[in-house]
Image (cartoon, rainbow, N blue to C red):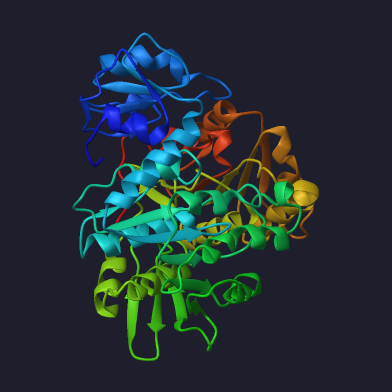
Length: 464
């Protein structure tokens, strides 16, 4: 963070110093997890559903924090505020105002984090860049990311998430983008929004926040995204597979590890790309990232070269791991919605071709509302149609996936219904063979990534 004395932080946040000296500077990271505290840092005490950050204030100071940001005195040096979330936003807003950076924002129902990782690699190749760790994209994660800025930072990449209309508008009130990418409008959080049209209203708040000299980067293949062009005064640049896209993807093919190769064309240039990340869907993510980079004055050739070097940075996001005996594990267990599960199953089918059995370990997809039952059954049918040999369905809320597969005519595979992560891990440990390929995919709340970790323990991600 740009160093700030506690007294100035108190003034910015409307807080009061308790047991703290105004002149002591915060020189380290601002964090909401006490396990991440380092020397010179500031620990933000957040009250959560299962824990209260105030209980960890003394532990954070012992680990090196110079103070905590809290809603009550903690017996440690503290800046006490009425609302830590609002205070964190105010602090991030102030720090961003002190930094001369361009802000690249990305939203979408799926692909935000993968695209963020691609963007981070591109912009890091031309200057100092700050991007979110994992999926820091909400009212806590976004300002924490902003507070990692230094005076040397040139580019700030942010994910903007929404669980309702107005959420992205709030985040843009902290830091509006200069370049805004909208990847897609899918079924993620459909239960909370009620319809895809409502999701589009929320996602479009990102382009509404653009200044007149900004750039909106929109998916021309998604009508709900393409329609957002009318919601901004900024310049619009499109990406997609159609002939009208400004950054057009054609000829997509995937290799034996599901790494896509394709041609990316603009009106002025073209290049043949091969990505190091896995999944056919990454071609469009890469096109969006290159389009945004060019909108921020990165040369096309530089952006193309960098995006091909990009590997999966965020954990549990299409990470392909190889065990010593040859077993391949596709760890995509951070999150799940119908679009991302379909993409992951497609990748599984490609990677397992010519090898042993394809295993799909799937948990429930959350927040799908009235369409949840049909969408889970559809995923089971798709798994069967793609030739998944062993389907492991984890938890009662996901059983309709197994029903969908079992009801698919001609499917000769098996549907295993297990209660939890431990049962899934035990089943796989007994049954998988070295020539098999295992996909692990579910909503993050299911913590199914523990299955992938157990299968591929002590092994490294495949990058070549």
